[in-house]
Length: 110
Image: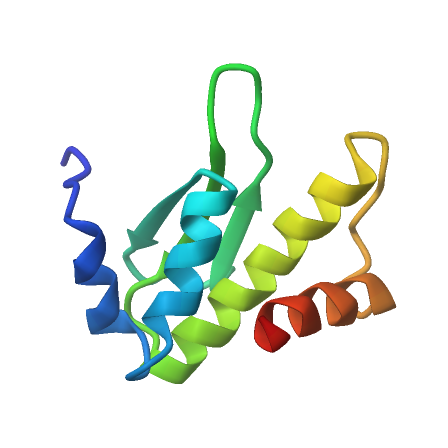
């Protein structure tokens, strides 16, 4: 089945009330292609860095409750911010590092 595009405002259906404006800012600033996916058992979300042909890509499971969706999206934005600041030579495999905490805090503090 082909992917279906939806207006950006549709994202508000997946987020807690009042959180969409902050997310929109990051989507526009970093030119992110956001995909809301079906349920995946192995991951809640995923980040793929931009290439010379594509924008940054983030996917988040659409079956998550609004708060889990927001936290997962912020986590993936943390990957993007860290990748953007450290470049292509960095290794971001460690899920519990200070880099992710710092990036997520940057997002939450606006």
